[in-house]
Length: 113
Image (cartoon, rainbow, N blue to C red; front, top):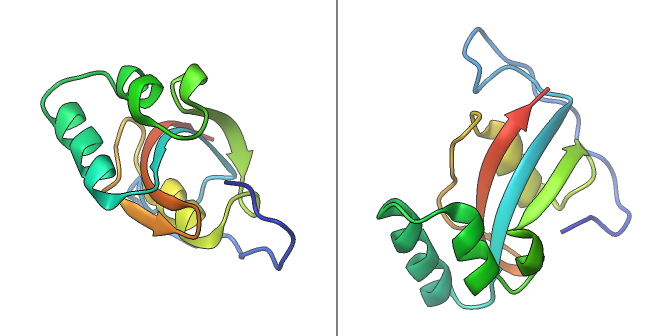
């Protein structure tokens, strides 16, 4: 979900909580579905204990063969709403569904630095 040009967003400031500390990069996985009903089905499966990467391989319409692995990325690389959520997640945390121009996403933060 890389941006196609445009201005980069400034790094967010933060306090003492890890969720609020600014990270220069995050390592994430995601699941992308065109339909909201499909992303909600994926979320339910993960909430019920299925592995995020397995569900991504089966259901995602992007990067499915890699289990949704996006690797490390810095601020300014992804589209606005996706990036905002990705950088707000704690390590190991999964987002609620996120709507972008590409569809609906679930984002899981694997690591932060």
